Amino acid sequence: MSWTREQRNVTVAAYLGWTLDAFDFFLMVFVLKDIAAEFNVKIPDVAFAITLTLAMRPIGALIFGRLADKFGRRPTLMINIACYSLLELLSGLSPNLMTLLILRALFGIAMGGEWGVGSALTMETVPPKSRGFVSGLLQAGYPSGYLLASIVFGVLYQYIGWRGMFFVGVAPALLVMYIRAHVPESPAWRAMEKRKRPGLLATLKQNWTLSLYAIVLMTAFNFFSHGTQDLYPTFLREQHHFDPHTVSLIAIVLNIGAIVGGLFFGSLSERIGRRMAIFIAALIALPVLYLWAFSSGPVALAIGAFLMQISVQGAWGVIPVHLNEISPDEIRATFPGLMYQLGNLLAAVNATLQASIATSHDNNYGMAMAIVAGIVAVVIAALIFFGRERRGIDLTRAAQEVRATG
Image (cartoon, rainbow, N blue to C red; front, side):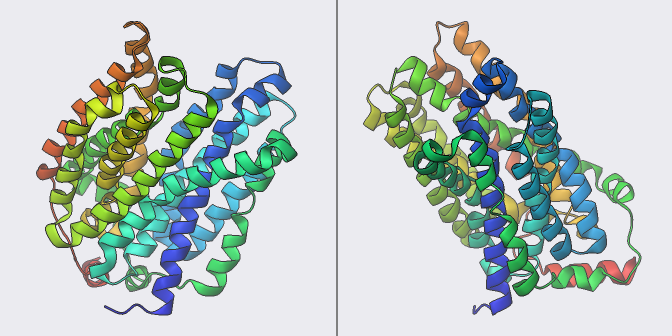
């Protein structure tokens, strides 16, 4: 199926929006030590900023999702990207730790809004047969942002310092001009624009079983991603005593696997269905567990990390399209993002949980990660078939039916 120029522009904008959002988030991860030194505090005090960012994401999903459902996806996405770019810039000007913590909490609100608004705009615009591939592409934005942050850190940090890293993070603001000039509004939102629709609470109440299911599913998904990523560098440094260069190379291989997995399983979901693609991707983690968590050499561990992220981000690559298709039509900009970020909030205990398991077993991070990843892979494979499948649904026609009955 051929694409229009507008459909291509929407996809590019949404992919870059999530990539640059993740880029701005991961810049912080590389400079915790430097910030702690300048403000004369301990690294965990600075790391609390990351916790705040993640905890505030559901608020952003709710605020920006509601704005997008009421005023349109396009203007909300522009405001959202401008907000997180400005807050990134201001973070680099922080005079003390308290100011930085407040700014990173506000950044979390902006970060939490982008995914839901961008994915709704894209899924409602691209041809239905292309949604699976585009879903994988959108989700690949997250590891793409991590890769980009790694490159900027490696190339520029020695010249610009930690504050300069945040100043570079204002670059996504340029994307706002691209969206303003080239990206149209979603046809599905235009179909509902002028008519009265049920409110958020009424719609969630009417779909309470779907909402509860989606939160549980996304909690498992966030345990899957955070459980295989967050402590992996610590595992490589503390348990295997690899130098930063080796850790960096393994992280690059890991992220390439994540991008490949998202694109492959997103595309595959068009042929075999969303649920089946997630089921297969999640279960790949089980035979890979030993190589990923219990190997000894850097090459074996890199292969294990590559294959594990094909599994994890392969399953994740189907999520943008799946959540958008099963979402109530009235609140499509709010529902997927809010469910995702609430799951993220509930899974925020992961790092503490895994670290506790590891330290109580003689710093065995490999075992702690394997326990969480193995359990959650099985949980996702079991859970996914309890939900509905709406592959290829006409989102514009569904929106018109809301207009007719609203």
